[in-house]
Image (tube, rainbow, N blue to C red; front, side):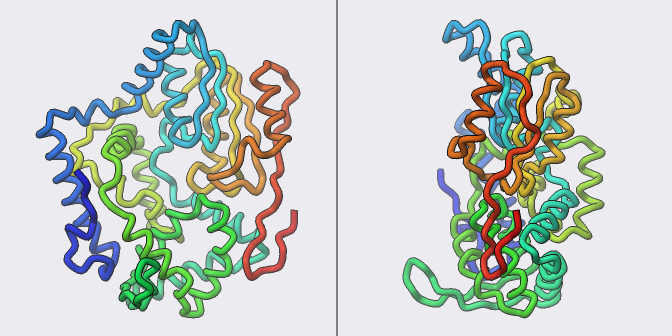
Length: 353
């Protein structure tokens, strides 16, 4: 059953995303009810159940032990699997790692990465410019005429502050988008939103209820009370507010999701040799995540991948391939840093290594 946000919003793309929050909640509630009516037990979609499924696959294959590889949410699942089945896990490789209490993002850590991007681009004014742009849209949402890539015709688009924050949050993991962000911030601070308009239109049209499984996984992993309170405190003053978690964090009622027990969100401390690769320009799973995970794992080795966003090529870099090979063979003396080529920021002088 496919649901589009436009089916629940009469004006389609012409409404501010903040107004669409209610439409998203209603659509999600309707989809969840329809799935339950078909006998689908949505609450079974949680990371602990999946961790046990992974071990069931191991048993079915007749393997006594195996190594786990996880990226982003996959690392969250790998950690849960190692905690529940430590004797069966030989090694772990975690890329862009997400720990047990990292599902919902901390706004302050997003700001830290944005500042790092600004410095790497030689554009220290970028955060102030993004704040200026969002403040401008919060005061008065802007109507843009955006070319429709499907028809070539002009489409009216109303953009508010949350629209801008959400668009940046959606694309910030892509190094190609990061390369344009400082130039876009400069343009928007001057009142020119033409660069961001087509992207906002595209993302709105792609937006929908999304994956029921993803929502249930995230909502059941949830966050500790301390982290939830911290997100609320930080969001008011952060450049992107709480857009990194929007709308998923606010859909507990719509999906009727029950968080896993608090013990699930405690650090994982199993003695499994673990290699963590964390990009220092990654705003979705920031390097601070990896440091927290590594601090709890007694046999962890963290490698910071400089100039890497959330999406980076693990296998295309000979240095990275060699690192993985050595770790999986049990060799020691691994580096603590790997440096990728610097991003070439659009419209700005070349970034320094």
